[in-house]
Length: 441
Image (cartoon, rainbow, N blue to C red; front, side, top):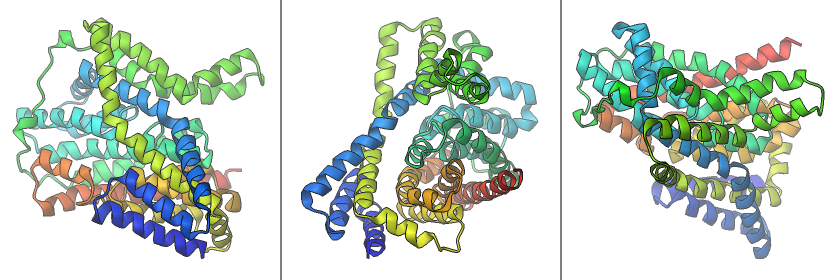
């Protein structure tokens, strides 16, 4: 019975978001209340669960999301991303422009939200396409694949981070495994599939041609790369070297502290304020306004995460987690495949990778205890599933179509296929890595 109620709750959530067009936060709250009553919880107990779920979810990720938005805004406004794109292009040459943008998308996509990366880099793609008479889609799709993969797979992006917190995975290991899985996924969905798109020669929207900043107004390449990659470097350094130090030593505690996502991104923001703000001639009041504006870009994410946390807590208090664990204990499907499939189904129906990922994480969390699977790989499998087949109910679909001026059919043949390849190749990478880890010991 609890599983039937849960399934009906998911259907109701999908219908409210995709059919009734109700805001995701309101849909989550409505379904949480309804499911709680159906599970036999008392009204006041349901309200306590909703409050507890919102608080526990937002308490662990709010600071990271806010700091990530601040870093993204500074990178966008300083010209650091433009510097990275230009230098990589210079290094590989015009004939290899698609590879330059693929690498740029991966580097810029590590710390930046997808929408920020898209709106930051796509005008550069369009500008290069017009300037060098290159097919915009041919050189741009590899970059978009990189942005999609980093958004779906890698913390500290919001959805992977929320999934990571729910399944108690390790940030450093998830990021390390994520990069291993991400590289072949990008090569398949971006480089390989993108190489088949030369025939799409429709001119992109000229309104999005990026204004070129003079070189003397852009930060240097060293500053741009180091500032953008600083959170990843700090987390990676901590993960690699902290186990080598004496347990509970001062040095180990410092490394572990610096490797925490909140601390590492905070350090990057403070460095960016200097390197991408003050040293670029911006005043501190101007920088403060930019940082405040960045929060507006992610404010709705907080509500969505809070609503998902509320539903997760209601399901937990209603005994659904244990029912799922009991059912899946004897399931023939591998837990990674099951999690991927659930995330993929919600993604296709709802259209939001964020909603898909964090909703699925709440349902499959009990699988970890029941099956003993690697929580770090579980984060990646859910993240891969959450990228499945973006179509007309996804804002990214329309954003892509508007920038590249494609027909509906061509958008489905390019963008939607690319996102599907991101998802499927991600699952394949997770299963392959799981096999390696299982049989290497």
